[in-house]
Each structure stands twice: as C-alpha cells, then as structure tokens.
Length: 324
Figure 1 (spheres, rainbow, N blue to C red):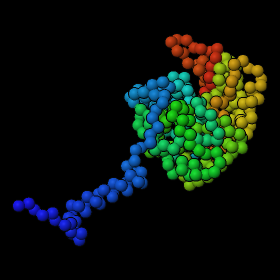
Figure 2 (figure 1 turned 30 degrees about the vertical axis):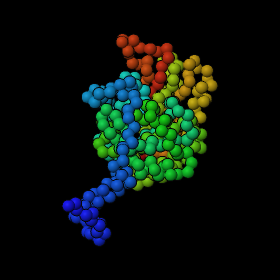
Figure 3 (figure 1 turned 180 degrees about the vertical axis):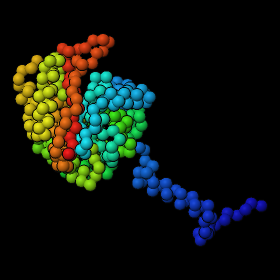
Figure 4 (figure 1 turned 90 degrees about the vertical axis):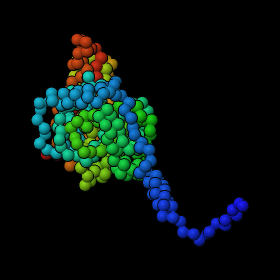
C-alpha cells in the first residue's frame, strides 16, 4: 500500500540545523554585500623585470644595496615630502636611495605618491581606486578612506583605470618604501598636465586631507630629457637651485623658460613637473619650511657594458622637503 501524500505543516518549527544554515547563508551574503569577501582589486606590477628585478630576493638586495651606499646622515627635521626619480633602477635607483634614506625606519601611516601619466592623457588627477598595489615584495594596501574622500570632492579628482595599469611613475617608488618603512598604506595619484591653478586645487585638497594624519608626500619625477651630458648638468642644477627657493610658482614657469633657450634635444626639465609643484605646495601648507637637495646624477654617469652614453641623457634628482 502506498503512502498518502502528506500535507505540508505550515506551522512546523524548523530544526536547529536548518536555522544554523540560514544564519550562515545570511552572514555570507552580508559579507559579500559589504565587500568583505568581494574580489580584491589589486593593481599588479607592470614594470617588474623591466625597470627593476622581478624576483623578491634580487629586488630586496638591489634596493638594500642602494640604501647602504648612501652615507649621508638623515635630516633632523620632520620630512614631509620627497622628490624621487622613476627611471629604471640601473640608472636612477641610486639617486632615489638618497631620498628614501632620509625616511628609513621613520613612522608614516600613509604615503601619497604623485606621478605623471606617461601613457594616457589626463585632466586633473586620477586617484588609484584599488584595494592594493602589488610588487614582488608583497602587497601594500591603498588607503580607501583617503582615496574616497578625494574622489568624492568636486573638481580635479577622478579615477581613470588605464592611467594606472601601465604607469611606472608610482610603481617604481613602492619597493623603496617597502624596504625603508614598516606599517603604511598608500594613495596612488597620477597627474596629467594641469594648470598652476589646478595644482593649487589639488594641493589644497591634499593638505586638508593630511590634517591630523601622519602623511608623507612623494613627487615622482625625472629631470631633463635628452640633452647631452654637459647641458643636462647645467639645466638640472639650475632647476635644483630653483627648487631650493621653495617657490612652486617659480618652478612651474621655469621649465618653459629653459626650453626657449634652444638647448639641443632638451624636451623637458621635469617630466613630473605638476607632481613636484603640487607636493611643494602641499608641504608648505602642512608647515614645511626647508628644502635640501640630496643628490644629482644623470644616465650618462652609469656605465652599461663598460660604456657611458653621454650624447642623450636623462637627469635624476633627490630632494627632501621638511620642517625644521
């Protein structure tokens, strides 16, 4: 005899195991909706193995050796900003080390890195809306609170993903930071060719964000592009002497004046001009009152296979902006 179909008991109490399963399912759904279990948005390295070693051990050794080669003592004041080059480490890594030596083992909660866009035309500033930046040395979290605060502002801030994916100006700074600092996060910013007024707007927002925060600002910039060795030294040392005057407006206008002098093959004096100007403005707003040029060299100082190419070179400078 077959069993009769039982009518469902609409008033039956679910078993404890059923309730547990429901609670777990709701909890997981909440985690996904709040982004806790959402896929991490990681900006993967674009120039590892090209601008710097792609293997962790080799990269650590390379950066550590650069830092150890700097015998200069640290600045005694509070370092608020740095200017660092962003070329391949074989050419500019030793110069960058002069800047990063100044902050070794110091404490910063957040490093705001501002570099020029080499691949994508930009208006204003693109704030990297990622969760982490990845290098062979590991992952560095992006400070989403600061990034969101900037992106929520009206004006020059936006997020252009393509401007970050292949951009080396920010990426090349991170392995140095990973070797000289301990616990920190970053805010990656890529700039186009904004006006001086735009730099002022960006700086104002950054200085307001920095209030009551332990922040370091890094301007990623190489110097003169493609004059010969002698002219590069002349132009770059003039530019550095102007930077020492701590006048952002003066620096902003100086590049075009140098280009009018007719120096052969000179195409730019600071490829990260807007980055340098913006960091100078921001540091001054944050109480910075001193500048120190730490080191200068250009690609003609580096021998590749025993030869130095001095007909067309790129300049590199290391500068610290600080509060006495």
